[in-house]
Length: 125
Image (cartoon, rainbow, N blue to C red; front, side):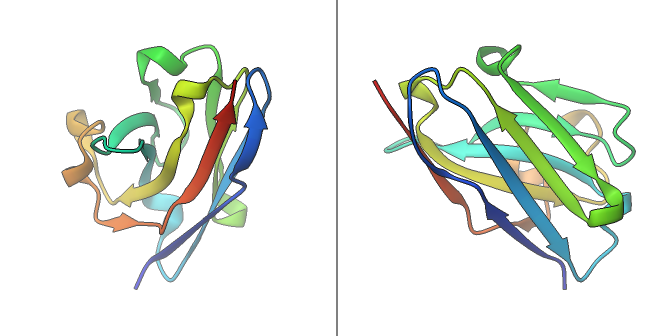
């Protein structure tokens, strides 16, 4: 059974940075497409960033382009999200998600079979 465990969340001032990590175990992480989603207070779970199994393709939510970078270290079974110039609207619980194949629906939560428990990010103004 694949398990995903996020870490790295916390409280940061606007303009600050955080790096989230997602450690995978129990399955073929190296062959999974991976993504980050977030869910703000009172909001639906929303796509943030995607990376293909080999790292060749990445996609981002428009509002995080140029500020967030998704990456992966397959040798370490770990997914990352580097978040720079954080803003209060980035406040949310961040989740990593994995799928053996995402295709064109990489932005849709239902595409992903495996989810972490989430890590909370709070950005103060």
